[in-house]
Image 1 (cartoon, rainbow, N blue to C red):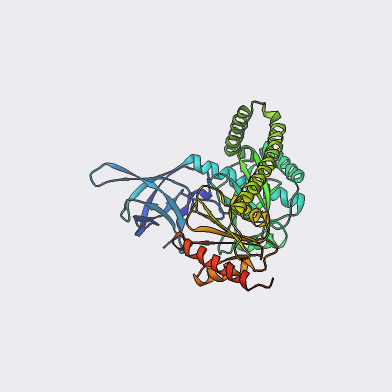
Image 2 (image 1 turned 90 degrees about the horizontal axis):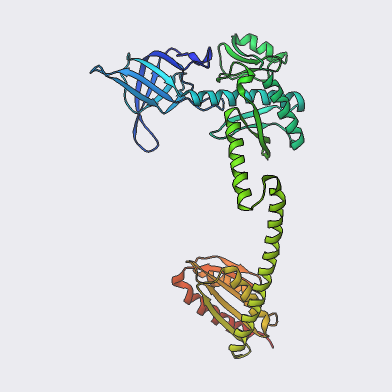
Length: 425
């Protein structure tokens, strides 16, 4: 099948076109619903490629009854034969004449982000010698991965300022096609950074006196249409540094959203936006102090309950075995309680159950003067049930289905009593 005429190559601002249906294939989507893949002889719809998402819009065609049907285009992809495939929910017959219209807001947003990426990558390469190895245009934010880094915040701010100065200069952004042989010569001479792995003429996108790049994406006509570039952050990734950014109307929307968040947060704290860092710092300090106080109270409460339980549990055959269960206490507190109970009196062991959820968490602890190994005993009994658990000689824990909890507790008690009875005095 002949390659379709891609109208966005010559004019990324084109929003409407007429064309003819070449082929239609029925398929199913991810939810097993029918969907049709429509190929046209010419199109302005951009398919997913080079990190840029597809266009959406509608195809209009005359029905047999004379009415005009508007069919939404949900997705656009390029198939292995180079055809641009439009995903629609209604079939169209081969040879049908259609009029297409793209979602301009989506297209222009992609044009701003993609051209902004070219500009940002060029400045990063020129200023820091950090080449871009990949680009992703997301729904809310775009990213480029750099071969190197990390990049300090102050350096990124300088790069951002340089990029916005070039945007303010409103430099032309132009496209042209050159033979592959010419593009290869430009690559060898250092005029191009890389070439796509495809035959035929190569489309070049140029930002005057800034960047020349082989690219098939859609771009604005001048840097002023990017509308501004805002770097949102950078992070280390496996192959270098990932820089997140937004351009144009996205940057305006992000600034508005940030302002709203600051305003709401300032109102909650009864302070001005400028005083928020100090107010949050005070809250964090108060939170840490309160956490320390709560932990101190928890430890005092655990010590009190441990002393009470050991006093209520008699010593029998050289062992004070305290067994309890809870349904309304958090598991960290029960663990603390088990530890404090074992330390509250000599010759004391504890078997505690946290039954707030299923499976049940079991804690086993012992006082230092007892010679059995809590972790070994619990691990062996759980292994017989096909479960895992364990810990140290003094403290161990594991989980067991609620239906087996009573059985495990009984076996733990028997094993601990045998170990105490068998240990030398």
